[in-house]
Length: 167
Image (cartoon, rainbow, N blue to C red):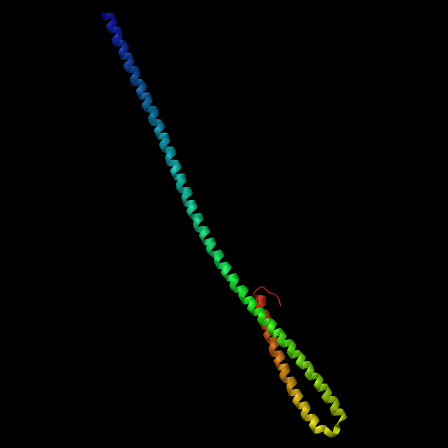
C-alpha cells in the first residue's frame, strides 16, 4: 500500500506540475496576445485619428472652394450685367452716331446746294454768304458732336475690351 500511495502522490505531483506549466504557458500566451491586440488597437486608433484630421482638412478646403465658387459666380453675374449695360449704351451711341452722320450728310448736301446757288446768284451774294455762314456753323456743331460721340465710343470700346468683349 505504501507503494500505491507513493505512486499516487507522485502522480498528483506530476499533475500539479503539469497544471502549473500549462497555466504559466496559457498566461504567457494570453499576455502576448493581449499585448499584440493592444498594439494593434493603438495603431488603428492612430490611423483613425490621422484619417479624421485628413477629413477635417479636406472639409475645410471644400468649404473654401465652395465659398470661392460662390464669390466667382457673384462676380460673373455682376460683370455680365455691367457688360450688358455697356453694350446697350454703346448700341445707343452707335445709333446716335449714325443719325448724326446722316444729319451731317444732309448738311453737306445743303452746303453744296448753297454753293451752287452762290455761283448762280451773284446778285444775292450777301444773302448767300449769310446762309453759308449759318450752314458752316451747323456743320461745325455736327462735327463737334461727331467727335464727342466717337470719343465716347472709343472709351466704351476700351471698357468692353477690358471686360473681355469685342467692339
